[in-house]
Every structure is written in structure tokens, then in C-alpha cells.
Length: 245
Image 1 (cartoon, rainbow, N blue to C red):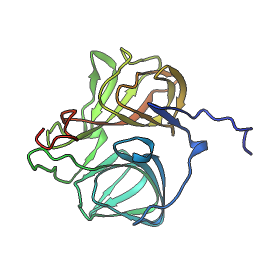
Image 2: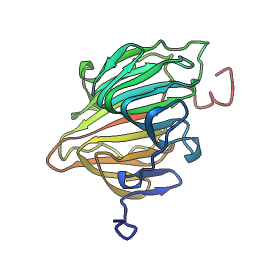
Image 3: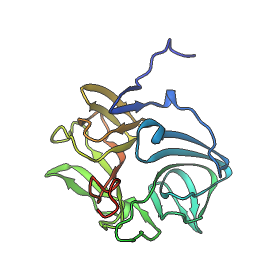
Image 4: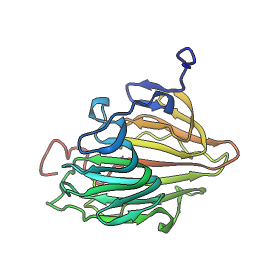
């Protein structure tokens, strides 16, 4: 029963928080026995698309003209003959025409972005495992572990990282920068400052942050807080307006 319209979800011109009680499911073109929860898209002001896919047994989907990053949340997903388990992921370049299928019920996060070329270079497809990526401290904060899931390579125009906070750990500063973010809470929870608002967050929530949105996070509770986060990267701020930058 709807709790008289109450939700933790909220929005402002430069950010929004979506909570599982607000999710709406619908299949996207190319999906069979699968459905999507679209979290961020150009219609919301984002420069990318992020959605979670819920695969039923035998579910599948196709890629499109955009580059894609897929991260398995639950179950097993096959990407171009490679089977991925939770915490494993795949990067697919633009127009890769790759078939993606699930083994039984599965759940995955998908991020898509139109590629901004740099000297005509396009990244190659690859798969990875989050646990095989060495964790690094964030800006001198040894308690906060960051894993960079995409290579440090100028051909990539976005980055995807996971960040893990022990209880009580916080970002060392309120950040405000030119990169936009899309963030899915994977474990635990805490408090997120977005603009001049404060939101309790927990696993399953999605957050979008526009460029220059003030942002800060602190982990609360008895277990670590972890999220996976997207940002646009490696391109001049004018790159979308001038072809020679």
C-alpha cells in the first residue's frame, strides 16, 4: 500500500535521488524477456544513459550505436561468449553489435554514452573483474577505497569507479566540478549532500549530479557503504562544441 505519498526520493535542477519505491519498469528496443529501469537519460538533462536491466530466464538484449559499460549485479550474463558473474563487467565500443544474454534470472547496470572521438581513436572491447583491480586511497584518505574499472587511457571519454567507505568515513571535502555523475548505491548507506539538500541513502538508490552540483557523502550504519559511479572524463570542456578540441 502506498504510504500516503511518502518517499525519500527528491530532485532539484542540478540533481536527483531515485529510490526503489519510485522505479518504473519498461522494456527497451532489442530486449527479450528483460525489462529496464531507466535512471538517467538526456530527457533528465544527463549527457549519458544509465539503467538497470532485470533479465528473466532466457532474457537478452542488443547493443546500439552508443558505447556501453555493463556491470553484473546478480546472476550470470554472457557478453560476446564471455560469461560474467557479479562484480564483473564489460566495455563495448560504439556500434559493436554485441548480443547480451542471461543465464537464468540476472540483474545488471548499463551505462551508455555517445563517444566523443579524440584523433579518431576508439577504445577496444574488453571484460574485467572488480576484485582484480587494486584499490587506491581517495585523495589521501586511506579508509576510502577506489577501484578504477576502466583503463587510464585517453581514448576513453568516461570513467566508472567503485568506492567503498567503512562506517563513519566521509569524503574529505564538498566537491563541485565540471564532471557530471551517475551513481548506484550497491551496499550499505549514509547521507548524501546534493546542492543545499541532504538525503539519506541506501543500497538500491540512484543519484544523478549535474556539473558543478555541490556534493558530499558520509557512510553511516554498521557495514561499509559502497557505490558505483560514472563521470565524463578526458575531454576538454569545449569538446562538444568545437570539433578541433
